[in-house]
Length: 126
Image 1 (cartoon, rainbow, N blue to C red):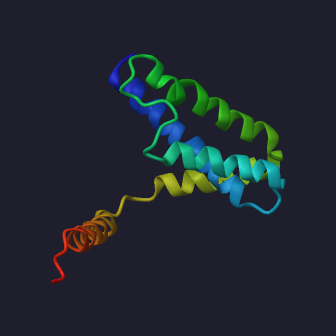
Image 2: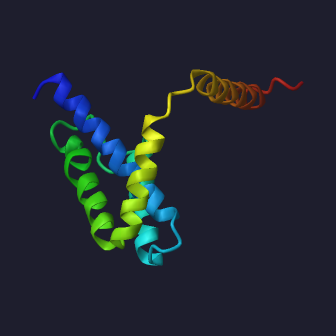
């Protein structure tokens, strides 16, 4: 598998994750499916893995098997009209340009919060 194929698959996985997220936000989605969709989307976007990636071979199983299975299950259980609307919305979102200014602001807030927490933990107030 070459780098271009991996990038294409990563883009597709992001697209499916966004579709599942938007389907979860739709009130026409049954409650149990909505809950499952939120769990799957949160897991896909979370930096914490069920199986740590540093474990050889097995560490990638959640990314290669569990995550696509969860996404497929949500898509299968969601009404087709909801999936269609969510897919369109996910495509529109994925096509929007990335805002580096917004990313810098978010990173700045995190750095500030970490600095404040470190200051408080190290007893810098006295």
